[in-house]
Image 1 (tube, helix red, strand yellow):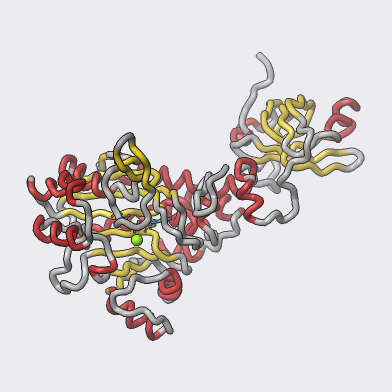
Image 2: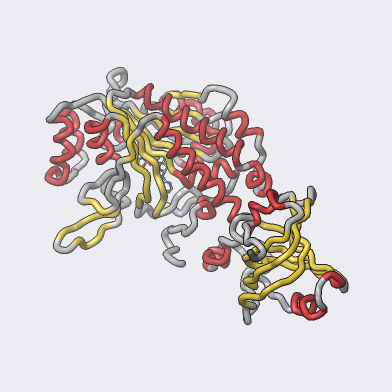
Length: 434
Ligand SMILES: NC(=O)C[C@H]([NH3+])C(=O)NS(=O)(=O)OC[C@H]1O[C@@H](n2cnc3c(N)ncnc32)[C@H](O)[C@@H]1O
Ligand SMILES: [Mg+2]
C-alpha cells in the first residue's frame, strides 16, 4: 500500500509517519540550503521544510521554480512543531508539481484594497483570513441548526420566489414570472407563520433579498436569515428565545473557533461578557430620550438609524433589546401594543461594540380585523394575501417570531468592520460579480 494521502488537519494524528499532502503552495521562503514552503489544502495550513542535503539536487532546484498557488503533492514525514498553529511541520522527501501557474498570482503580499480583492473574490477566498471567517460562519450556521433541532423546531423552508411582499413595498427585487409579477423573497416569515399553525415550532433559513439603496457596512442585497416562528409564544417568550440563541452562538464560537478568532485578532472580552449576564432591555420611547441626551436628533416616530444604533450600543457591554417601536416605523404584521397603542409589540436586538441590529422580531397581529385595516392602510394588494389572512380565519393564534441576520452576526462575532467580507459571494448595489 502506498504512502497515505491525508489532510493537513489530520497530520497531528500521524506524527513520525510518512504521508502525502495534496494542495497548493501559498508562500515560500528560501535560503541556499533550505526551502520553507507554506502549503494549504483547504483543511488548514502547514510549513513543509525541504533541506538541500535530504533530497535530490533536481528536487531542490525544482522547488526554486515553484510559484504562489502552484498545485502540488508533497511527500514527507510529519514532525511536531509547537511554534506552528497546526502543531506540526512536514519534512519533505519529494514534491510532485501538478500545475505551476504561468502568470504571477494576482493576490500578492501588497495591500490591494478591498475592491481589487472583491473583484478577485474567487481567489481571495483562499487566504488564511478568509478561511478563518468562513470557518466561523460555518460554525454559526451549524450551531443554529443544532440549537433549533435540539429544541424540536421543524425546518420548513420558505420559497425564494414569491408573489407576496414581506417587509413592505420598498426594497423589492421584481422578476417576470411567465405572465405574472413575482419577487425575490424579502423574508420567509409569512410562510413560517403558516408552518407554525401546522407544526408549532418552526424555522426557515435561506437567502433573502432587499433592493435597498443602502450603501452601508451593514447592508447586502442578498443575505442569509434564519427565521424561527412559534405558535402561542408572546413578545417576551420571543425575546427570551433570541437571548438564548445569541448566547449559545457566542459560546459555540468561543469554544470551537479560538484559532480563527486569534487570527482575526478579535478582542474576546466583549464576547465573553455576552455569555456572563442578561441582555439589556430599553423601551423605544426611553431610547429616544437617551439618544437625544447623547446628541441625536431622533424624534418619536423615527426608526433608529445606523448612527443611533452605534451610539446606543456603545453605552452597553451586552446586546440590548429596543422594544415597542412606533407602529408607523414597523411592518404591517406586528401586533398593536395594548399598553401603548401608538406602538407595536416588537424588538430589535442590537449587538454591542457599535454593531447594531442583528435581529428584528415581533409578536404577530392575530386579530383579523386589525390586520386587514393595517394592510389596507399600508396599501397592500389584498388579493395576494388572502392565504395569509386565512391563518387568522381558521384558528387564529398568538404567535411570535424573529429574523436573525447571519452576516451581521458573523461580522459582529468576528469583529469585522464590513459585512461584505463574511459572505462567500457578496452582493451589494454595485457588485454582481464574481
Ligand atoms: N421573521 C421575522 O420576523 C423577520 C422579519 N420579517 C424581518 O425581515 N425583519 S428585518 O427586516 O428586521 O430583518 C431581520 C434581520 O435581517 C438582517 N438584515 C435585514 N436587512 C439586511 C440587509 N440588507 N443586509 C444584511 N442583513 C440584513 C438584520 O440582521 C435584521 O435584523
Ligand atoms: Mg429590522
